[in-house]
Image (cartoon, rainbow over all chains, first blue to last red; front, side):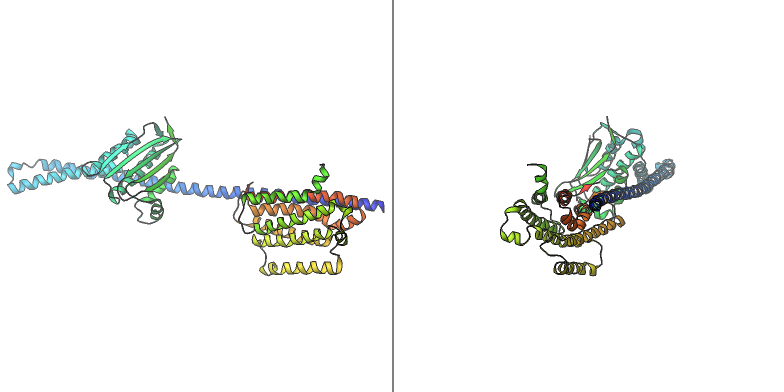
Length: 268
Length: 220
C-alpha cells in the first residue's frame, strides 16, 4: 500500500513535468514556425520589390535611351537639314529680288534661325550631355537659366556643391525629376517665381523647389500619379522609387514647395 | 516574511500586478474586458480564500459551516472558465457558431449536475477544475493552430496571443494537479500542500503574462 502511495505521488509529479515540457516544446515550435513564416514572407516581399524595381529601372533606362535617340536624330538629322537649308538660302542674293520677295527671304531666314535654335534647345533638353560633362548642379543651373530666358519667369538656383552622387544614372534621374516638376509648375501652376535650393546633410541631399503658382498638395499628388494623364507624375514616382528617395508637396496659400530627399549621396 | 508566506499569498499579490498595469496603460481592446473582470473577481475571491486559510483554527461558525475556503475555489474555477470562454469568443477563435452558443450552456449544465449529484459545493471539486483545464486547453490549441494556419505572418505576439500563451502554460501544468487533487488532499495532504505551491507559481506566471499583454505586443 505504501509503495502504491509513493508511486501515485511520483506519477503526479512526472505528469506535471511532462505537461510542462510538452507546453514549452509546443510554444518553442510555435515561435520557431512563426519566425520562419515571417522570414519567408519577408523574402517573398523583398523579391517582389526587387522585381518591381528592376522593371522600373528598365522602363526608366529605356525612356532615357529613347530621349537620347530622339535628341540625336533631332540634332543630326533635322538640325543638319535646317542648317543646310539656311546655307542654300544664304546663297540667294537679295539684290536680285523685288521688295516683296526680299521681305519674304528675310522672314524665312529669321524663321529658320528660330527653328534651328528651338531644335537645338529641344535636343539639349532631351540629351543629358551637359549633365555628363559638367555635373548635376551645373545642369540644373543651366536648365533654370534657360527656362527663365526671354520669359516673365524669375528663376533662382542656390545649390550646395559639397556632395557627389553615387552614379551618373542617379544624377540623370534627379535631373529628370527636377525638369519634370519645373515644367509642370510653369505649364500647370502658371508660376512667375521659381526657386531651387539644395543642401547636403545626414547622407542625403534635399532639393526644395519653391514657386508662387498653383501648387499641388500631397493628397493631389498621390491621387494624380495613378491617373493615365498624370502630368508625368508616375514617371517622377518611378524615379523616386529607383533612387529610394522621398517626395513631399507642401501647399500654402501664397507659396508652394516640393521637397525631394535623395539618399546615398557622398558628402565631400 | 519567509518564502512560504510569499508563495501562499501569491494568488493575491500576483493578481494585483496586471490590475495595476491595466490602470496605468488602460488598454481598450474589447477582449480585455472579460480578463479584467476575471482579475477583479479573482482578487476578491483570493483575498477571502487566503484570509480564511490564514485563520484556519479561529474561524467563525458560518465559515466552518461552509467548509472554510473550499467553495470559493470552486467558484473561482467556474468564473475563470466562463470569463475566458467569453475572452476566446471575443478574439474570434475559429469555432462553429452553434458550438460557441451551446458550449457555455453545456458546461453550465455539467457544473450544476456535478454539484447536485457528484460533488458537494463545500468541497474542492477536482472534476470542475479538470473540466476548466480541458476546455481552456482545447481553446488555446485551436487558437494556436488558427495562427499557424493563417496566411499572414507576424514576428509579434499581440496582447491576445500573450494572454492565450499564459493561459496555456497555466492550464497545462495545473491539469494533473486539478485532476488528482481530490485524491491527493484526502490521502497525501502534505504532498497536496506542496503541489499547490506549483499551482501558485503557475498562477504567478499567468498573471505576469496578462500584465505583459496589457503593456502591448512583444517582438519574437
